[in-house]
Length: 343
Image (cartoon, rainbow, N blue to C red; front, side, top):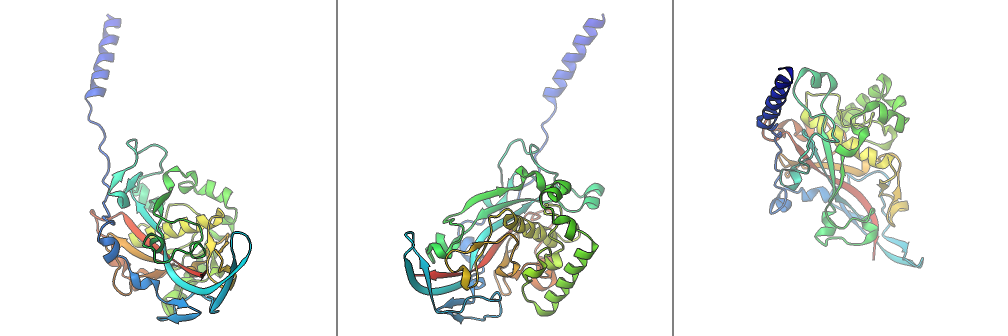
């Protein structure tokens, strides 16, 4: 009798497992970037000012400090022979960043999921419950190469494209990065976290925020551990310290991923007379050479249509660029100021 009951229990359990409905996937927004929006929703005035032969066309208030103003330049070719040319400087589209609430959600690629097993190898999903509120907002981030100037044949010189990417490509998914969701592991890998992820370091970021609000100027590299009004860059994880502002939380995660790129030795400093021939690798993010533009859910295509790292959301309209329930995933374009030598 006991054997029959055991077999019956196994059959009932197996039938119940097969009959149970599969767990529904969470939603994923479609950014609809490709097509006419790739032209109409890009802030083309973000490229200004443009420098040719050292002269600025457009306002030069947004130029990084020590930007090149020499009219001519010289770079070696592949054989080491010097080649003379004229200097060019502009804010060029560089990367596309997206922050999503659910792993493997790809708004830029049409709102698809890259993996059927959406829970595997991924950090936590950002859910509005008490636990998430205590831990802070968590976003998965994806980074695409986005050299729009090269893709449209506007500026194709290799000196003007440090990194060498000529088309759009998926470069990073934080779902496969164990440090993205583990603050302790990130601290052991990036040892300077212990110096800056503390009340004193955060106080310096608050001072930088007040400076940005007063002067509306880009943050400088001296406080490389800060992201202005967005918060501290350390620890270099995808968990922001606030759930009150989706704009600030997603922007801080983007800035951390950019800082992480530099800390891993893959980011270039691309402005100044010494960086005219392709840029030099820079271990800490030079914040003054970057600025951002919202692309989804509400495009930032009218002036002011781009903002510096750490700039207050009240000055950039970030408060109005969140759409609850239909646009909680975020996509931004990163512009990088580049000085280069063109032939």
